[in-house]
Image (tube, rainbow, N blue to C red):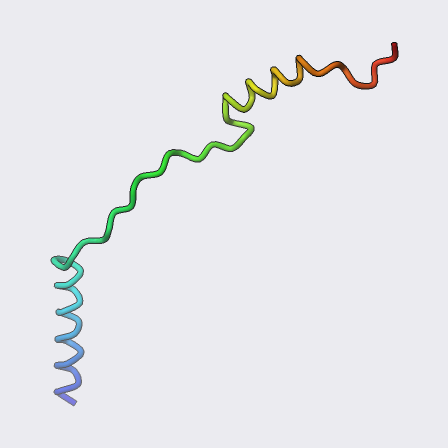
Length: 61
């Protein structure tokens, strides 16, 4: 029983030391903030331009 507790203690110490001093995580490249289409100024500008260019639908002539 003493050997089992010693093994568990040794594994615990090993894991704590590995987390503290082991190889770090691989850093991923930071991504830009994701912008939804309705928050994207370029999309809204293009949408406004398309709306102005399109003739009004449903207008009786």
